[in-house]
Length: 428
Image (tube, rainbow, N blue to C red; front, side, top):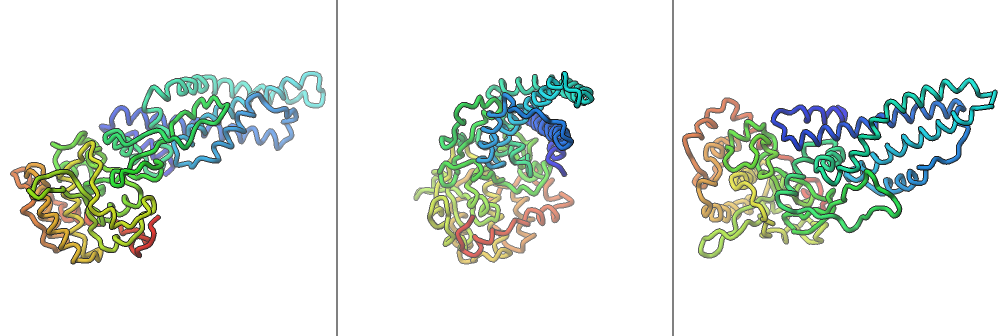
């Protein structure tokens, strides 16, 4: 499936928030403009190959094109600004081609050898003029609105994350919710460029585990509750009371955190969890990270230049608290799959004792459903502390869910740790 087809698919999702829909539609429009330019280039290359481009004095926009092409080469395509600059080059490239063909047409007069080419150039100029007048107007509007309308900036981020565009939207919601974005000071606009379409800021994002700022491509959004379930199943498992937008399912921003990529990989492999931090009076104070897999302790964390054991016990950046029931479920899931993943069971037993004490201080109305943990326990053949869960009449719906075994199987199919982490290596 092409990048454009993926975007069309997500743009057609029912109940998609209006801002998301505008962003997806805008991203599709950007890709179409770039594709048109590529086709236009092919026509120009054929003219050149056939010897029909004979007046080669540089166009007025060529210096700007060369400057932006050099700048583009310094950017990774996973940066949103890469695509903003590429869109600007699309606009300038069209102007360059039109200007070059106009030169050929203007130089025909009085040249008997090439008089037969007027029709060729007239057809091209007529075609480009009709097709691109409206497009130029759109591009001018984009340049004016990129700063004003958020969905224009989101469109560039969606294209940059073309493998999973829904993850781009999820990450943006999390950055806003937790206030963990800032403009990077390491990259500035190139000198002397109007930067008409390339004014999308390069960002730094704070890791909620390390509290360190880093490049946005070194950060990754993770789901707290399992990502391998449908929106309907997410509602069935956790309800909608604590969601900020239940229609988003697992992509609800209350169900997400943003970590440095090594930590994100460990989270998705259930090697790390978050539990309440309690004081000596058994009172909740904040949230802390716990490492569940002893194999991870001696792995090096590159960004912090320390071992993962130094992350054990760190407090969560908690400007906006995520869903507590989902956090608790992730802890249960780490316990549940620990034997299957060959975690050291002595460490698991120690974390079970620690976590049982920690979770006992949380209001039972915020705890995960017992009717969800019971089939999880059955699926893995491990006794889990159901006394830390909540039960109510609604839970009968989950117990009677006909596909509960298949649901549990999908939930327990967590990814393996990266080879480097498994081997106690240096990570990424």
